[in-house]
Image (tube, rainbow, N blue to C red; front, top):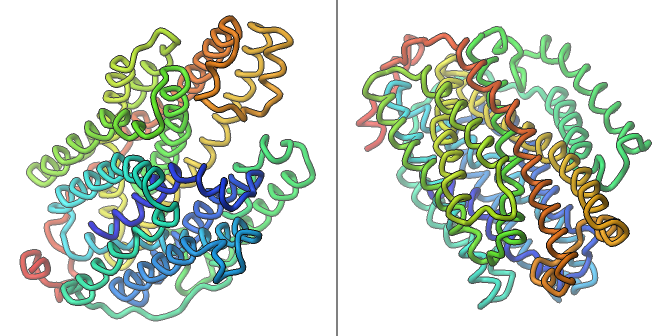
Length: 504
């Protein structure tokens, strides 16, 4: 749980501290790279962490990922300090160190999920994964509040240094207390497959990050990255078919449940992360909420997701049934997106709270159930790959969703501003969205009203576009075959300790 807190808390805290970081280090034009570098490091490393955990033992690899994350955190906190050359090169250092931090973060969640799979049979696994979902939700709520406190009362470097004491405690407890069952596997790393996958993923993430923002979609840079992604991923397939220990075994996709859950994970990331990315903008700009309170404003969504995750985990353990939950979750998520698409300038904070609570309810039915189904669809030896693949497709879906919905938002906002405000709207639209919510009220009243109406309509349109992707989730989930959850680890794992002994 402490390791999961490390991974989930970090991004939420850093996001709140970014204005202070930019003020000291400069490099506003490279601000997006601070986020992109972390996402890139996490996404690229996720499949690799899962595979090497299967090969070399989960505990050693898990501890290594925590150490890498802590080293990256310490270096991020030192970026631009006199020890590393001063503020002049601080932003470039921070970007590089965030990539290192992301590499470590890629192993935290994946290995935590896989360790639960090693210790607990599928029939019992739901309640543990429900607790993990609860911890994730709490971290996402606490992150902005902790980040706001650090930004207001401490140096921004503590946004990174706060990871160190948590990391040291988790390392000490895991090193002494974590006892995992041993199993022998032939140790061969598919280096060529890992390189091709990493290059292909990097190209895809850069396309979704830069396309329509840094570069036009038809620019040589974006077309070149698309070509690179297509070529490397096309080469990846025959390489994986011939590899003795493929980094992502393609045979897994012959399993209907695994393929369906991978697609659902992609759609979940696409619709959820792509759309809710705009909620803080609506709350802070249209509804006038402060940045420090953004964590509290997300409480209805995260609280609902946490309660439902705990309920679903316990219900799966009791009944052994799970197919119904992704169907209910998909319907709930689509309904929540529809409610959010109705928001306008007259929507109150309590109404938004109800809408996002409905969305959180849908998320609660889906978040850990998808991981459970993925793990139950494969043999014990492929548990790490199944866990990393589930996380990987959700992450890739989120990257695509943020890019597509960002393009829709920008286009819609530009059209709305021009239609409502004429030349004044064109000037606001040409600013590239570089506006400060606190400074908006300095605008003349007619311009301010037109801007807020345009912004609210544009954000509502984003949620409207997310509905079809959310609707696909229950449709795909209906085709899942409900395979009985194993009460043990199978014939190949008779030597594994029973649950009570393993947990003791």
